[in-house]
Length: 172
Image 1: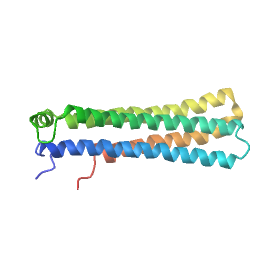
Image 2: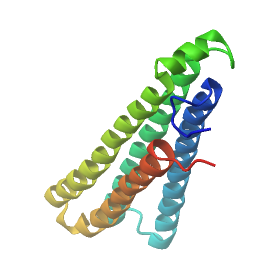
Image 3: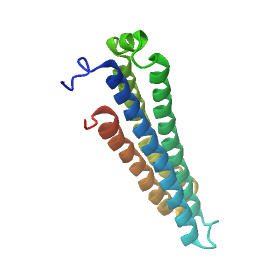
Image 4: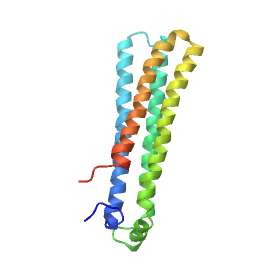
């Protein structure tokens, strides 16, 4: 059996689209959790200086990175729901027609495009965040730069997940 989506049984094509979305969703939720742990670690290392502008700047950008990761998770979840709603029960005529129309593949590609938007948003948040902190509190730029590095890492993780799990997954 070929790995060409056109020659796959409809249930396999649907399952692959759902698996790609599920793995993307899990990866984005894990990214939010990792950023939470990093933020908690940063606060504990800051000690009593949580009111320090550098800490506030870093945590502000870290929280922005979390919001972008949550947005990416929501995009993956919405893509999963769209696939589920657009195909019928396994083996049904509705699922055969949906696969013939390319619905699962189209939804995977749409989710990939939306994640690309989330990647660009993460980079924009990092740059704008550092610029904003540089304007409003020059002494906080170092903290903002550290937070921006973490936000750019969010963009990199989204890029890796988008490429390796969603658009070009390895086939068993």
